[in-house]
Amino acid sequence: MAPRVVGRVVKARDLILEGNAAGLADADLVSVMLGDGSGGLGARIVGAYPMPDGLWRACAEELVCERGVGPANAARLLAALEMSRRWAAWPASERPTISTPEDVIRICSPQFRGLDREHFWALALNTKNQLLRTIEVSIGSLNASIVHPRELFKDAVRVSAASLVIVHNHPSGDPTPSGADLQLTRRLVKAGDVLGIEILDHVIIGEAGAHASLRDMGVM
Image (cartoon, rainbow, N blue to C red; front, side, top):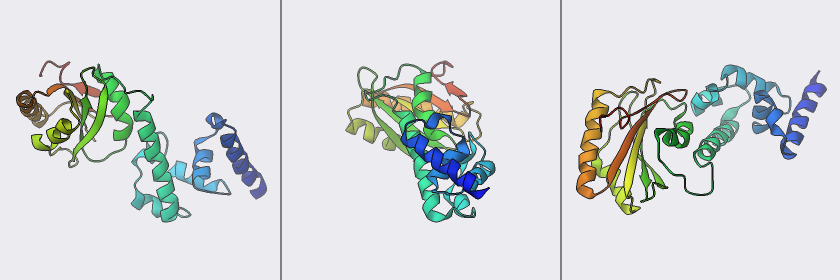
């Protein structure tokens, strides 16, 4: 039995090197990332953290406690997940254009996936609505963002942003804006007016593509 499983892992590595990884099972991919020669560790990790969201939500403290993983393998797996987030946010070599809430979702949702705290970002845009920079403004609590206009606009001014789209996640999965979200949006819009940097939209991201655009809701 063992030689046959080892052969499967070796075959998985060969398929990846040949550029034919698309047909591999999730467990095979995880086994290769973890340097698992038997294939059993990959299957066990995928079983403990079911795809698609399980691994995205895994943290280092949990992974290092899994038998056969340890700090080095946990770091390797988390690094691979972070690379996939970053790749998904930059699908093309040219600067992406932000014209709709769906554009915001495409760029930000992969990087918000699995986070258990509210992360508040700003997408700094040029005069053609092309993305200049993604600014991480703050990391809040389980259900609240802590944002000061000074922290938002100092980097926007530094990169000469013509406008901003602000975006944050709701770890609960429900993107419905809270009263605090609405109050913060109005405050930031006023600050942007003073500085000549327009806030085009505030997009709140939930789970599975669920989102709310305060511009579309008519509250901006």
